[in-house]
Length: 147
Length: 114
Image 1 (spheres, each protein chain N blue to C red):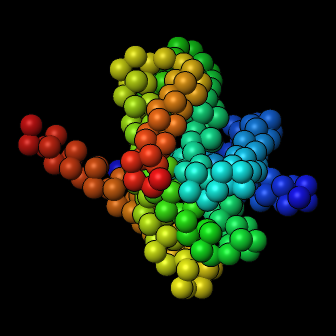
Image 2: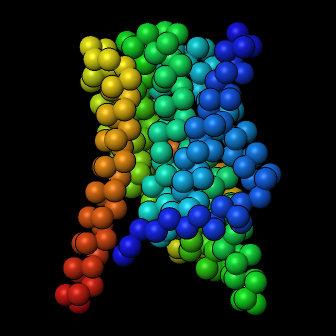
């Protein structure tokens, strides 16, 4: 399976969807900071991985796929909800990468330059997530060939 | 205080929007979904926390974040299963199942981090 950049997908994104994501992202960051200030870094840190953005993303994916199918006169309800499920599968795999991101920050942030640790942890998130995604694809491919 | 909150809001909004846009343009969908768990809020928050409260405080937050990420894995896995099996409206399931994230992350906090 080839990974593609489809810039035309950006044209389907409406201005209010961009505003909505910006608001969700901004509010989640402010709320995380406030929780940490009120309850301390141990509780506050949990919310660094709060799925605040997922419901907005899932709703937009469902809406976009439904609209796309409607344009070709197909009822896209089932297809759009399967697309959300696939999005959730990716998010589950990405969250394991997020755990690795947290692990590296926890172990190295105190005695290494912060910018370097943030950069390395971000790369580790990306690499871990892609490796898990690719491994799942290979394992699934092998099993479907055998059967 | 208000200035710091506004700054957090703008940085958080910008980072989350950038990762979301990246998720929009990538295909296939399951690969794009990886960006649903991008460390967007974490990057924005931790960079500011390191600057204001120091790396030790941020490191403690990062340790808890591991628990939050594992809870997110549980949340996304259940959303995946429910969406494939029953195909309910996405907003209903993705918001109501946040309870799973809360129970799992606070469960790990209670058992391991407290």
